Image (tube, rainbow, N blue to C red; front, side, top):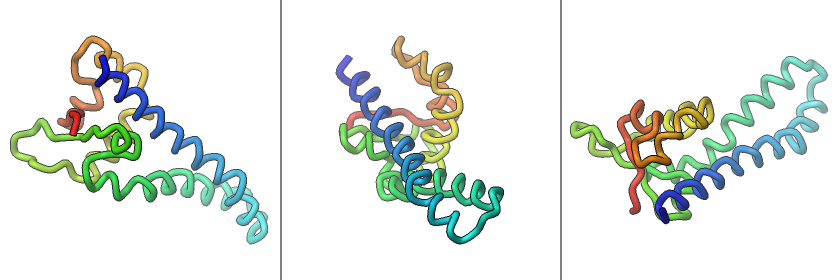
Length: 131
């Protein structure tokens, strides 16, 4: 039960970082871009790019260690369940955290509540451990 709570709170911290990047983009980056160009398409593309790359840039040092900021705060680590792969590459962490969880977290994460691997863990051959 404690592990599950750590997991949930770690995900909440990571989600908060995503919301923070959206806030920073709309509050600070878009006004700067508006001074450079009046083209709404360019502004939208730059804003979307910043919203995607900002959280990745902030979390990259943690991802190199198989963590995110939230997981690092709660001493959790992503490890590989694949016997041939010893370390979890950053690309797999990005896929696991960004693509799998944000795309369909509510459906993929439901198995976690009954003690099974989530869909994002099955898809990336990883699991979360206390580390």
